[in-house]
Image (tube, rainbow, N blue to C red; front, side, top):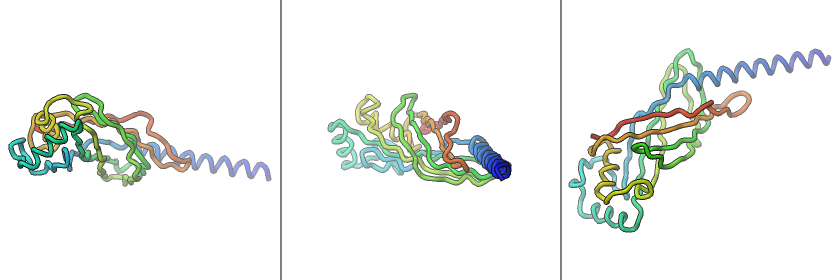
Length: 192
């Protein structure tokens, strides 16, 4: 009887271990990339239809100047991540993802995406990472210079800028959550 229980336990561990290895391979086989930047707002101004500083109305310029003078210039945007999962890979489920954002080579903010995403085999899955930061905390310049940086992120104007995201996904396995073995770095050029 003891031998039978031991064999059953070993079989369970082997089966669970194979499933975990398969799920881990599924995540590490994913190809992550930045698919775009969207919903860019600076000091509450939606930059979706703005092409230059000159496109701003009087109230927008006043709002931008007031924010700048107060010592805060809030910037909010979404970075869309794409995870391509090869057909031979099997499904993968991401439980959460730590992230760190750099703009123009300068690390700015970090966060945790605590939403689950399924990456079906043979398909691409996209999901947003919502970013909020104070431009004045990380960059120097006048209000118009910093506005131009935000405008570049919208893709509507400004000079080309580099967005870099470093991510560390955690996947679901039969033995519990499993972190990716090392951070993934992705770069994306916007603006211009």
